[in-house]
Length: 312
View (cartoon, rainbow, N blue to C red):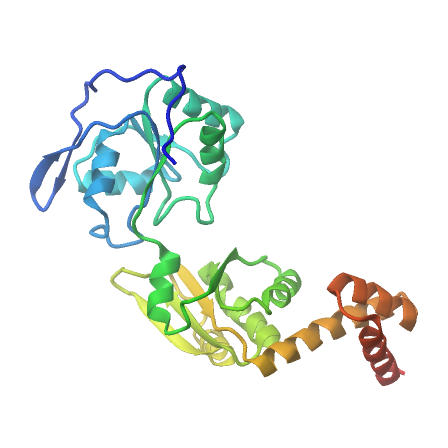
């Protein structure tokens, strides 16, 4: 559906600043942009992975809203783009968003970028997009690189269904709990992880998810791009020995087999029951877990009874 600017929005006069960019040693003039918010994908590493449309939008915009202006400045300089940079990141508050919305309403075109890849994937840009939509202002996607899809297509894991989790909790206990919660999702699991936490995260994933196939993709599109494949226990052992790697990390985990899925579900039920049995009777613990996990009470009671006998 085509979006239109309401009557409060003014059309801009021709920009005073020269809207040009340079690619392949040739200078090009960017086409003027209608007012609005442009969500622009930028390279995830290799600066050549950018579209001509993205360069044109970055050059023609009145300002580029950047997660880290130092990172984006390098990209703009590489292509001879002089558009002013404005910081927009996770600490930007509602007042900042209101100023950006006001600028669009007054007839400006603003380009939103992240440090790398497609904005709004594990970054705060969605709040600005929401604010623009609520004001009836146009929001235009300028597609391009994405670390998530780049890792997926070289992983060798199924690509027909996948689930992007983003970053797991930093603490081991919370991380294992979340891994157990997403264990039954039918499809490839996709995670971001900081290099310093990767060995611990893989160890937790191996403990919770078992012998699933997995991939660690590091520094995608860059000089030291590395793709490591194996089971979760194998990868956990490799990185436990090697230590934390450097660079940006994407982790992909294959779907469990039917037998593995059943075992994982049983493990989750047992963990919940064991925790409940510390403070409740067998009957009450079974009822609580059955309600929480939406399983038959008789099944939960039978498992609780077995666990209680083991502990006695």
